[in-house]
Length: 244
Image (spheres, rainbow, N blue to C red):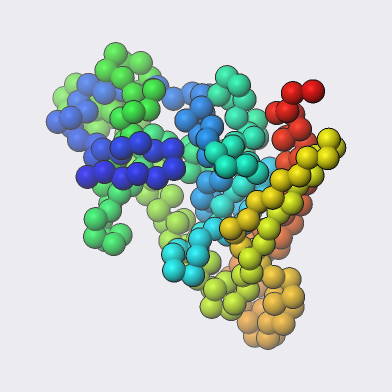
């Protein structure tokens, strides 16, 4: 079973037979995300993520639409990665933190298999970091923790899907293009995503607005809208990557 997505290479199902002596060394090196200019974001992350990133909705009418944190203006650009692979934000999206692990499914989400990107630099058989399995073949506490993290992530993914489906049903999303201008006069544009329309939001019925309030989705919407101000802050980050 394999899965390919963003910075994942070939994700292989974790098994005691294949990974008995494998260990994973993680830390502060996020170089694997250097060429990723956005990552999926769960609705539960909005309050923390909005302090750092512009939150938009990515996808099309034919595909699943999900929230995303914008990390760069140009293609394959991550403005939050330092030269030595560090992360320059106080909040790191869960999609990034779960790497090199991921859930894969072959039956439309009825069952999930834990997979690992074996190409991750931290994967090793030299006991560096955390072992996946104990000498007796049992799952290590580390692997159990990984499973719990991804199970929680999947639950939040389903809740986020329900949230974005509600936005689509209410026809609140509209296409947007972000324009960023540097002090040097250089200009950049980023398109291909959606945001909640303030005008459409104002036209909701009292009953529709009340339901969004009761479900806490109205708070998510306004957190998303406030986060769009972070696009202007990205100009400073972009300027910092340009030689004087």
